[in-house]
Image (spheres, rainbow, N blue to C red):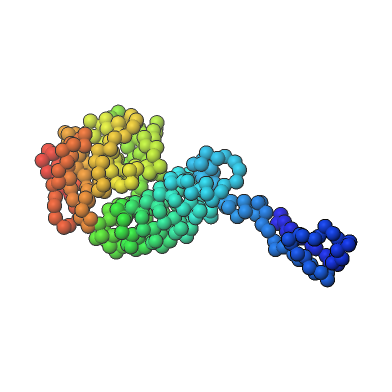
Length: 347
């Protein structure tokens, strides 16, 4: 309740006999029935209310509270500034109201929700990575001012144009599988050196051959899974907020190479087929993706763009060592695939 304190001093005359105690008081009230009123003063409750953030969506609020480890109580703007990363995936979020106060966010995961309106994300100008996989996004123009953005996942939305991303000079990787953005904006981004993962008629639920024990590796909702060829016994292999893409079985079926953005740029990781902690094979500032095993399992071919506006084919040993470039020309070299005898690579 807003409280207003008023001090009323009514005219009391100036007779020194009646009011001797008024002599010497520094605050002079005056005579003749004048009234002096103080202006309204905000209470502590007012200040507290102004500094409190209210989230319209319970799912978003729950994610913020989990990140802050604060299950109850008011959420102050100052507290929200402490968040640099937020995983709000899979919470049925539809309304982003309140997220604009998370001004220092650098990594934001919003995959597997019901988000359509991105307008409030325009305030998060420190974002470096944004995952919007599996939402209802059509218009990405609010992202056009996120000048620190390096990677964005837009898989499985309704995006029809990537042109709003053309002015983002730090952008390195765009995942856009399961959308129809139009080839012109895709080509324009690729011409600027951005690795855009999109093909006509694609789907994010990709399958990668049959590995050890007659199991299939596949991508579902942004993460690597495996299951038996009859569809039974599904196992989730990756649990990172940025997920995984492009799983590729080793020839012996015991390892899976895949692409992920967990280090701030696209890297190739290696994972044992049974699960466990994946190992970064490429580990450099470039965008690295599309791993392809040699038939003998000794090498992995992949795409990298250490130089902007140029993507080339590289190979490395299966442990990440011995990296060397195979193709070097101004064209865009992607999708490496080994010949059966391991002597040639087509792309």
